[in-house]
Length: 342
Image 1 (cartoon, rainbow, N blue to C red):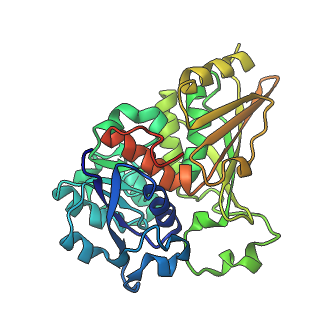
Image 2 (image 1 turned 30 degrees about the vertical axis):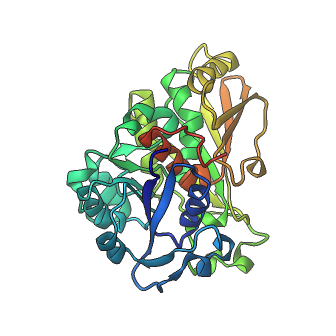
């Protein structure tokens, strides 16, 4: 058997980093060489931060700069905040590592759009042009050859998987699409913030980021590719009193002459051979609890007259982050896509 692929994880002390460590631990062809944290965090075993990882991974988490100088890896996962990833990726690419970035730093192809929504100058335009958007079920051919991969956002994954096939097949109109998404509190990351405290989140439910959430341009970018024309959406995220999971309810208008059979045909063409997308069909409901801790995306839809409502459910930390990243890793290195994920 070939030696395991050597992996480094920067941002290992976040929720997505934790889930990634857990998934890689059961991967037969990969091994973690180093774990890194951000500035100001203590150097300590990962099991100090996440006791559930004791005996699964006992590496000490060190500063990212120290790890980059100390070890070379075949692949690096950057579970870092936006802006931080583009400071680290160039050095890893120069060392010959293949990089999978969890942030938005390489997702938005138009630099001006990125800088507008993230309010920061993009400092790695040279590598932005080679980045591949890692929505596995749509860009598999490009992913196989990618050196730098932009792992999709959690909300975009929950919206793009159900919508892109319908736009690409011309089943729905590209105007007037409304995406109403609800996420568990882990989607905001592992940080001390009053709005995310248990007593603030529990027994409550609210919209946030109205007309201003940074995932909107990412969703519009990829839907425009699918439609072959510019697509503008109304996207409203909500915070659920749950640890993990996203449920998206999507409202669209059918194109003239299209109906439920055309929706079914579009989904069959897109996902009949896709293990991690489960199309439940017409009048089927999907639930967050049925995808929790898994890499699945469940899709159901309803049709009435000229309107369609599509619902999708994913785990924001798995299919929306660590699981999709590992699925991308498997594609990039030629492994079975299910390796480490089921």
